[in-house]
Image (cartoon, rainbow, N blue to C red):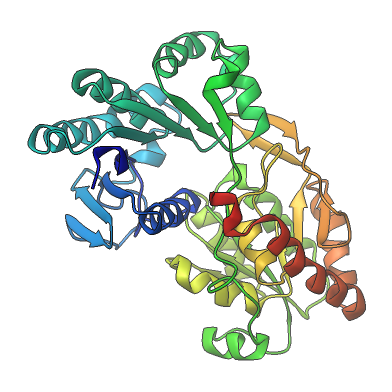
Length: 385
């Protein structure tokens, strides 16, 4: 295989660690493998998913994964408010394992692709040392233009890259503001496997399999249990909901786990689940009636929203996002009341909406029918090409 078809991928997070980025990288490496690329992934043993481990070396067709054991102790989340320390935590292992991989595999890799800022620095150094082409993917909107000191550093990291891949138009505009040339930046849209995995299944069978109440209106939340994901509002919605035929299922883990567990003790219609692998999430989507606070950013849908819609599950999305302590309005082109609702994240209003929806099967079924077709139109693997 030509070195042009060989990619060294650097990422601090990869499956079986759970998360949207990890699932996207599974899809991306699978797609590249089918296209006859040889992908070597340098990553860590799962850092944020408890009780999960994987072999140091694993092969999946043309994808070869090398997972370095690394300190856990929930350090990634503990260091979130200290970006420099978080960088120093994530950077060294990727860099040194990548360095030794390239030393012992000379001439086999033409391109290095880093995911996230820590991996971007490792990509910058390794591509310079070994004279390779460097690529970087950014998986969130960092708002560099509002942080001048960080912007100056990031500009020096990204300018030498062959190409920078970003999820959102807002991210591209942010990079242009700090001096990255437009022609270096490509915007892409994620996709999900809505042909074989995320597709409609029998609701009653899924509920029976998962042990969920057979006759209740089930509201699903999937994501990290943290303030920026809207979990505080979700818990307030649970408290405001008066219809006892409505049950809430929260799938995920994170720093707000104690608050979630405390609320569940007081409200028996709140069910919490953690440690659900991505290949099991499809059953939760199909067992539910609506997704609450599906992931959304300024101008793109998050993966959970794409997966839910692919299963024919309507969604309730917040009309604003919050990252790094700053709120921004979501500017997605959302077909209101066709596949769900884009709403102000206000607990009493959403609780009332859920109470009404739980008694309006006609509207719910209309949205379910449209949700699946919308996902096929917008989130299929045609986005990978």
